[in-house]
Amino acid sequence: MNKQEFLQEIKGQLIVSCQALPGEPLHGAEFMSKMAIAAKMGGAAAIRANSIADIKAIKQATQLPMIGLIKQNYPNCPVYITPTLKEVQALIHAGVDVIALDATKQQRPNHVTLKEIIEYIRKHSHCLIMGDISTCEEGIYASECGVDLISTTLSSYTEYTKDRSIPDFPLLESLVGVVEIPIIAEGNIKTPGEAVKALELGAHAVVVGSAITRPQLITKDFADALKVSNKSLDKK
Image (cartoon, rainbow, N blue to C red):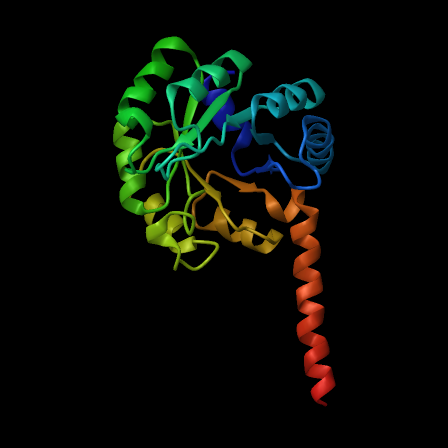
């Protein structure tokens, strides 16, 4: 699938992020592939997934366009979304349509730059590149470095954006106004109404993850709301 075909496929659509980290109840390729099948049945246009095992299982189960990443922590490094060429090479070999990576200005392991990673991907694959950012400045930087799409994934997750309101609609609106490449709304979108608002603000597509694929967090939202309600009722 070439760039224009992929962009047309996802335009105005929902992308579901099927991810579960070690220690979570649904961690494992078997569970994530089932979750991706459910997402496809519900109308997802593409899947975003973490780890080679999950990516391969989801590709086989759904045949949907695949945005792949590898979360890998390195000592004394804040960058963990596809941080080095090692992860990039694995994603290329796995046959993803899009490689998602940290496109902030934070220092990567081995002092490899974002531009060097992008140049490597261009030279060794036909994969598109999604740059995950947390500020408008980073979005402009990622665009200048040559990514194909920008995602607001990291807003509120970097040290310097932890105080941001979520979902970060102001960031989305700012990026749409200054960057010409497609902007993907991602990060803490919990309701259909918020997804619609993201499109209205100019997002090319919307990624939803935890609100669909992490039942323990969905359950917690309901349970916490009932606890607050019970406290209010007890005071009456």
